[in-house]
Image (cartoon, rainbow over all chains, first blue to last red; front, side, top):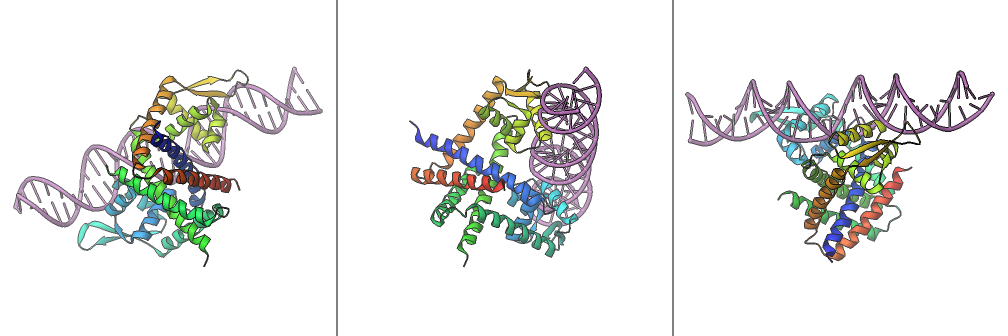
Length: 148
Length: 148
DNA sequence: TTATATTGTTGTTACTAACAACTTAAGCCA
DNA sequence: TGGCTTAAGTTGTTAGTAACAACAATATAA
């Protein structure tokens, strides 16, 4: 019959399972480092994109600016982020990480990557490489689908 | 150098991206059906596992029993779930779905699978099949890792 | 220069999620 | 049987996730 639909169904299940198990892992592995999952995501975004305005960070994270403002607040309170006024636009703020923020993200990232390494220790390199390519394709496809 | 670690790093990024994009999709595609993401997950678990006790549902979902109790409450209030006393154990409750609950999950599932289908429309069947196998392996590996 | 648009914060609401304390009901055992 | 312990759920509390609306301050356009 419609084999494309059957594949879509199987893919739905597979991605679902992977997401569930990783969400659980994130709760366990990130929250023990004094930050929540969303706070860690903001940390990561600021590490990868460099200093950003609040609006840019919100767009990058696909979150509302109000939600983003509060996530950033929690990072400020914990001493992991800094807010500096943009001299070119008095309304805007530049968000950046403190050395502690950079350090914390490096620590969390390291532990998550080590977990990932232990997960794939029994899987052959060829299979992992193939998975990487496919995951990339799926992500691109999903992102394009969102933009519709 | 350590190629396994590099693969782990790449996998961490790839899975991260996939999860982010799907989390966003879930918020968009599930919440428009009158239920939250967690409520939908409970719905799904009850469809797939059949009637469960609250404790069993909590274990299945990797959530605390108190959290689960409140998620179930919201489904009861919306008329999607039923709570019946277990005649064998007066402390326990049996949770099941109303016809409306089954119907709603079927609707949501259908729309998510259609989205998935549109995502993979440009990807060859062979590639999708390979991705399915790999996603399964990754999920199993991640689940085993959690049990440590 | 007034009108409009943008940036970010705060108020509000609902949901996610855990831990602790508590209620009720089983199960054990002396 | 009566008391002790364990188990199942609920409720209180706290913290975080996330959106929408309203708002203040600043910038841009007409």
